[in-house]
Image 1 (cartoon, helix red, strand yellow):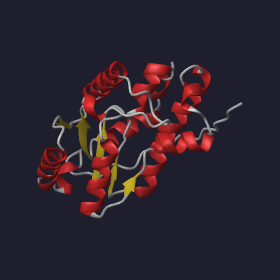
Image 2 (tube, rainbow, N blue to C red):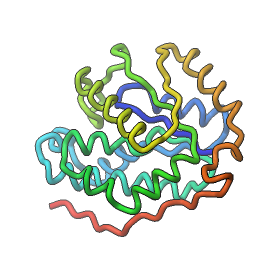
Image 3 (cartoon, rainbow, N blue to C red):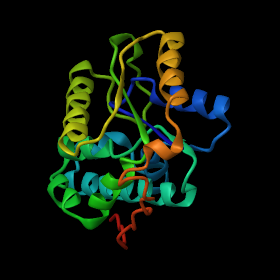
Length: 206
């Protein structure tokens, strides 16, 4: 069972993923953007003004997401999927390059075998923590819209999560998961989709 929470920052995806992780006892994949930013030792303010660095960073985030999923393989819950492509479109010119790679095409097919929850934004959930995008409502709405476009464009089925209250959010999630038998979620008439391969890239920051 592969479960994804996608959407803009400051929507509560990590909290939902952690709750599912605790209740279902399946591995949780940590947010890759935080991992890469910490390893590259990049302050978020620099990413907002340095387009070349932002390009390297977003490329590394996408590659890391694929690697983390390859290592986890079958059962996991993740608070990201290809969400960073929305940020790549917002801050870099990387998106056309990424979506035209075989890795991305394979990943889209891989995602079709998972259960995707699209967590929609609420103003009251806005927060600033120094490692994510600014808690700016207009920016959150832009990213939310771009994630929706990506989901629709690539034919990915999803369940929108609109409620604000945690209890109502979990009711939606548990209802969907209780009716998602693993065999029903595999695309291609039940044939297993192989984990996408990640293209070898060397990321360098000067």
